Image (tube, rainbow, N blue to C red; front, top):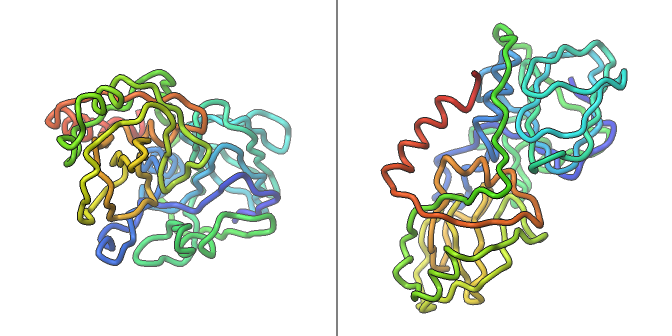
Length: 303
């Protein structure tokens, strides 16, 4: 059980998402870095698909009235226990009854994930316990956590694995690797050059629906497009030429030209970008992107 003493900036119950509902306009959603949440779950003996907390930029104060076994993965936050001792990251933590965890600002990156032994017992919606903020369902009452909320845990869990999780590689200057998008041919030479040679920054008006970027305008033919299916990581370019990288809760269809798509192996990097961070793009062959996606899931969890 978890009692929320004070809420962070955006604390959401998340699992691995709800695939299969795109025809109804519902994206897969789920944890922005599913491998990081899976790693936290394994450290406390949960199934990788158990629900945990996704914490963004500034964390909450949490009390564990019955104690518990927890793990934190992803970006490191300034965090302390009741005793004032620093909290270990990427490892199994055993908390006494009544102990608290206080998570402050992210020291680097944007998001971390907290798993509690047994998982968070919120009602599933469309087969998932993930919060979908745009529609206000899933997770804990369809919203971010608030002071006074109480989260129960399930009694089911496996053996605790006293191992350490692999720390995320938060490379502030590394480009996001992309493959060509379906409308890349609509962009003239100047537009392509602006996009691939340009330096962008994440705007404050960014969230799980998408990251808006400020920087050089990527000009294109602006032909009217029929609505098309889009996925997280798709880089849309509206008429003003300023790219938008679609996020985990973004729309499942869109009408803007898609110049590129962030590869699956770099979606974890996307999850750690915060407002003001610099963004560059670099191309990669599709076959290489597919290989990296397979390798990432094999090594990203526990080492």
